[in-house]
Amino acid sequence: QVQLVESGGGLVQAGGSLRLSCTASGAIFHLTDVGWFRQAPGKQRESVATFRQGGSTNVADSVKGRFTISRDNAKSTVYLQMNVLKPEDTAVYSCFLKTLYGSRADYWGQGTQVTVSS
Image (tube, rainbow, N blue to C red):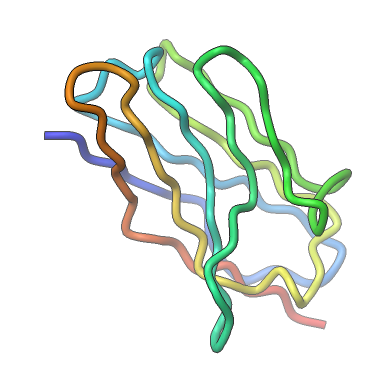
């Protein structure tokens, strides 16, 4: 059973930084795509960043230049470094993992709240 545990959310002032972490268990981590979504109140969930098994990354235009995604396969962990945070970045951030082996499936973390005050 794959499980994802997130940490690192919280309250920060505009212009500040946070680093989110998501650690997986039960998966062959180096054979997965991983990333982050976010959902603000009253808005649709949006993809923030993805780090594919092959090494390529995608970052949403709205956070490009401010957010960086990275992964440590030895620790089965994906990170989201968020700099120059803005109030509009306030949302629940959830990590996801897509297995690229076996029956292939998607898994989600429980979500962590990020609140940016102006």
